[in-house]
Length: 341
Ligand code: SAH
Image (tube, rainbow, N blue to C red):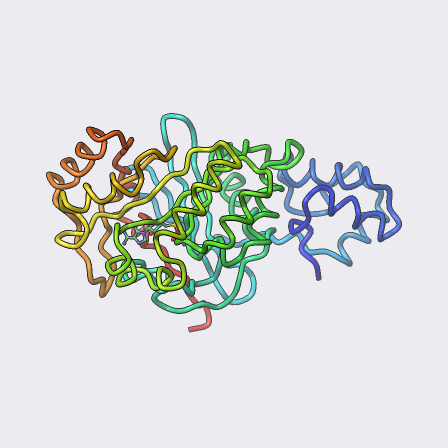
């Protein structure tokens, strides 16, 4: 059965035509799903009984089950969802002064193999569909009654390795008749799958691109992130420049600081050289400890020195708050779990 949440509005209009219905039914269904946030076709009371029956026979509505919910002392919540096929994924809800932000997963597991990240540890199972990405937001909104204002594609998985579903999910989230979250409030993070960065630049979506950079030379970056062997730093930065030129959007670079690895002033100097003149922002992340992880967190003193060096040399840098680390909900700490094991 097809998941009704996999369709963006235009695609659902087409689908309605294909099943002999008027395209405006798609708008009605969208309203029920994303405004009223109903969990069944039966609740879509302005659709005829026959149409509701037809929908029930042909489509699922994909309501994830909450298996576990952990709350951090800083208010961050981590959800473990049963995604209805024996797998589960994690989604994180964070509270900021500007509203609620949700960190969504895009794959069950991850192929990228970054040495510091728990998401990669237990391998890759499958891509999430667009509807399964959207459902993470809906399920959290339904559970909390909150309205989510920001979405970051920074959970489990590599968004650019599930490109079509990710872009389609953004169209659903962004549509005023869908979840109506502005593109500027949506960030997509990538470990650096260069061809997909060029592709995203051509989609005409005003989302923020975040790049997990983490090192300033190829030797070090390749030792931390195997993807760098396929797409080295020069090619990655060229793709970012193209993205900035085409979208007029500022790119964000994530740089996780690991003690004695990439956190000394020499690294900061190299980073300034690499990024000078680019319309960008650097988000420094104190590296989070993961099981069997090779890296440890830099000292607070080093992190502040690193930030100040960047800021003093014309690169805007901020330190990311470490939300949810007490419940393993912080960057790099999310993992897939197999319910059958
Ligand atoms: N695969 C995408 C999306 C994940 S985003 C990407 O790599 O960008 C999650 C962010 O957290 C990435 O910037 C990732 O590099 C970073 N991260 C992973 N493990 C981390 C850890 N142990 N400590 C801090 N940040 C980490």
